[in-house]
Length: 101
Image (cartoon, rainbow, N blue to C red; front, side, top):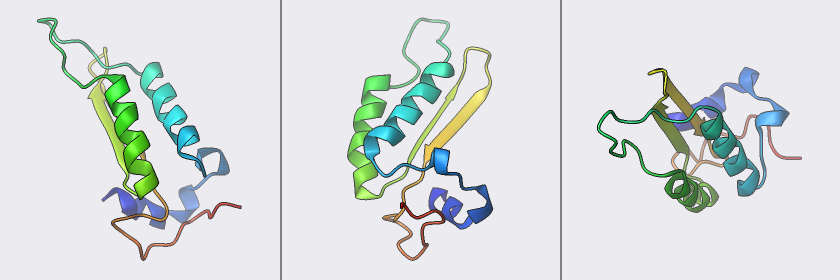
């Protein structure tokens, strides 16, 4: 469960902590663009568009719902990156490991 990452207090970092959704989504987008998904051999779409992913993240994150993006890259490596909310809608009892200042 992604919300359990909030218990890993020794893995928090200020540079990976955002208080505004736009900053978090900017990080998701830049990570995606640095590691784009591979394309299918038949030319079909294997994943939803980046625009759809961004729209979902902009809707879900303010409600405390985590966002996970996973896909195979062009080199066939699997990449997974997530944005975990704090306070978390599904784990309201887990405190923020690095509360915003």
